[in-house]
Image (cartoon, rainbow, N blue to C red; front, side, top):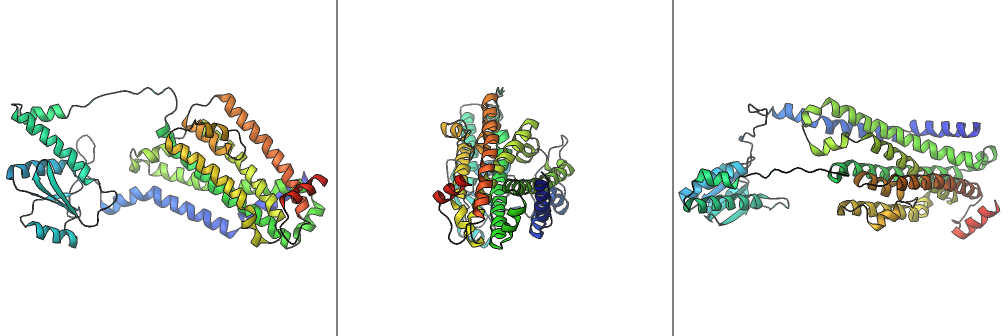
Length: 421
């Protein structure tokens, strides 16, 4: 136990004193601070927005707003379209140029005008824009606006006043939703963040464990260490130290994010993405920590074992490639299931009990579906047993790998050596 404590302390301090580790942590905290303070800083630079008597923000068109031009042959239609588009496109300055179409095209190309609608009538127009953006949705908004104008016009011709027609077309349908399970839309964002954090942490720290082991082996330091400490103590000490370093880094990053968010909470308003990220239920936070730690251990032990079989640090990337591909496949299986909205498909259910995929798959199902507690318990028990089993096997491979120099040994040779150990 003393050996384990000594190794754990030494490895953890080596992480905390590492300039790269500290630099990345500080950089991430600074980036998080910049993101969380952005609404406050931008509000100071741009200036506060006007609010009406109810406290709602009023979008004021100023000289900096992009310009949208409207050209129509019928003066009556021009007035109708101008009023409707002014309400539908609050971020634009709507102009009615007196110049001809050729002049308007030149102004669009030069950047004086961003776009233009040339109206043949209320049901036909041509949209002019320079370098059409793939996210440009102006035509969709215009189509909906013009459809409402045409309906109001048709109702007016039938003897209904424009005010009554507008009131009829603007009727709102009220509905209520009673959710008896989990709100996938609300939980999607922090589920995605957790999966990405687990993905990055395992790839980063797993690679670091493998590299550290390979470095010790190539410098012959491992031969000295293995004679004074048990392989299991060394392997568990290295892996737990890397896990603690990762948790410390994550606490620093996400803790600062939570602090900065609360400082700037009023400036973010009711942003659904930001709000959902910081309103994670406590039980999900506990499950996230459990699956994160257990999943990290499974892969870190394997990375450490693979690192001990490499004779040179340069061989690490090639040696760990199969394990990395396995993890990436598990990651994409979860992401595709999340994107489809069906996280209870057969693939995800099977992956929920496989140690290499369950940390991501089961947590995703817990966050975005309703999973019976016994299934969660079985998955966690399998993971815990797998951690100890893989840890013991990795320690044996670690002990055998110390003496394997030269070419990278084949898998069959490693298994044979472990059985004899």
